[in-house]
Length: 234
Image 1 (tube, one colour):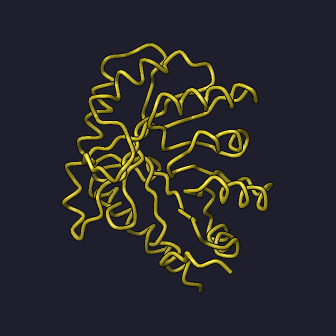
Image 2 (cartoon, rainbow, N blue to C red; image 1 turned 90 degrees about the horizontal axis):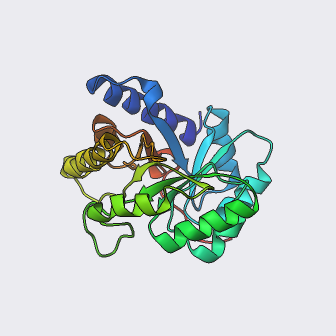
């Protein structure tokens, strides 16, 4: 059995255990295999284990992998910071954009997906920890932002996303995940027109179990599946 296969079995076991601990059904949580910097062969190994949802941080890499594996019924999620000048490459290739963090980016997505007559499912990235090094809207800016994009015809806000701080003890991020869920519920309770959000993208290799216990519907696991990242080229 390959390392990827063994790792996936361990990740699946942990997801199921976290769901059981929190009284959730396994079907409520989608695993995104974060394949950034990883070769196609490793993605194929994951596909052989039934994985069909992959996340990429860079548009160029997402485009190349999507096009090479087209026809395999895969879902590609853009999870990294998205530059406006790269948006035009995404219509028809991405299932969801997790990292929408500004009105100008949303306007560009609306424009480019409008040209293709496709609706973009997006998540609003929230900088819950207030880290200067991270992208994302401040929590108090999320609602006003959503009201500005609610009537866009080619964007559908599906939920919220956050990248929690890197910590040794995942329990340190529990409050961040709980606060993101509370923010989502607060917005849901207001019943705004054209805003029907249910998704929470939170939790990575080091803390996805805690994120699931706090309500994550997407967890983004890279190292836990594929091993340490390889940034070397060639």
